[in-house]
Length: 277
Image 1 (tube, rainbow, N blue to C red):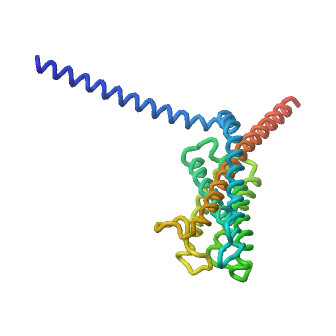
Image 2 (cartoon, one colour):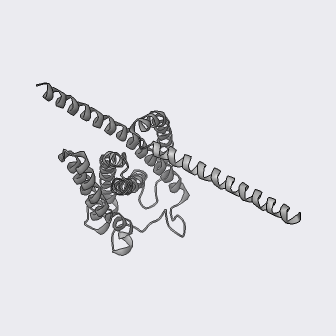
Image 3 (tube, rainbow, N blue to C red):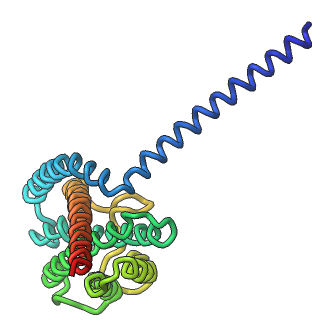
């Protein structure tokens, strides 16, 4: 009887374990299905319509706080009032690299997983990344003149960022020059992944070569080397710029989906008109 009881207890435990495992698998599959639902352009448009107003509002609030902190803090004892350029230059430089990283991930989605919206994401991010990179170059030049005595030097950091700007422009031109969306997506994805090698060069150029730029002073192992009075507005502005990127990116993806639908409808109408003739 004890042996029978042990058998019954063991089998019940197995059933319970199997039930727990089955519920976990069902929850995971549900999460995967919800994520994969975003591959549907119609569902993505619905999500964008709900998310964009909140993102835009939060971005505006953070920019108001960040700009207030940026203009109310004291100037640096060495750089004076020009230190305030940092609150725009540094987040723009960060976003120029983050935007290309998003494009590289989208390129993998195009080539490996064939995600329907991966190419839409990469195509929409390119002009935004070009704008952030241009802003970083301009503000860096404005900051460099009083600090270094020159508007521009061909050091490793500035040169690699300028190359990044040219890469953005090249990808934008490529996407507009090719009429076949599928072929353009594959070629663009390959070039994006090849060009990603420039991102670690930008990041570590100040450590690998002798440049005018100072080493990392915010994200480093020993902690931030910036005074908290300057660090607080810098971080707020960095978050504001990041939310601005996601707001613009989602809006640009929505516009790209609409553009492709309009183009497809025009082609179908042209083919139908040709058959009637």
